[in-house]
Image (cartoon, rainbow, N blue to C red; front, side):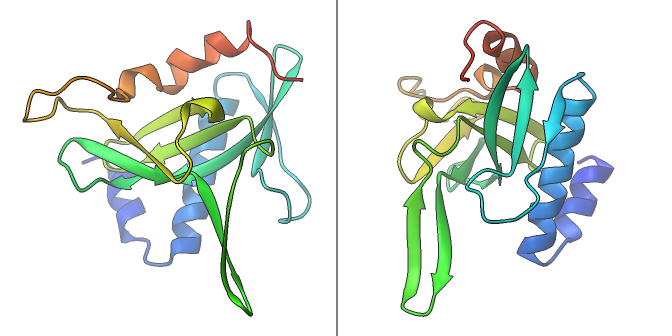
Length: 158
């Protein structure tokens, strides 16, 4: 486990883990020469906007957690807000273009087009399953930051 993973794991408050994940994702994009814009206020459905080849992408940043099956991580693809009447859960369809997901378990950052995610959560597998099933699996190497970024320059959302 890397030092960054250990430090991340030591953060007890969910808000601090979220802030750390955002910083890790932003750093990953900026270090690859991508401009990152941040909304002034926290009422937008996206956390950042990235400019890639003169196109802008609205990105929601998430932290992946260890899935119930070994060798996989999972993240939620909907927002949960606390209201006086209870919880309000809402999807991101039409509001974001991509999810950027930091997985502290394997210290990797994924970039996933919203069209490729399920309505409530998505599992990404970084090890082969013990049962040998390889159908309908979201393999981590398909969503690594350096794998997805080149495809965005030829498939812009403006």
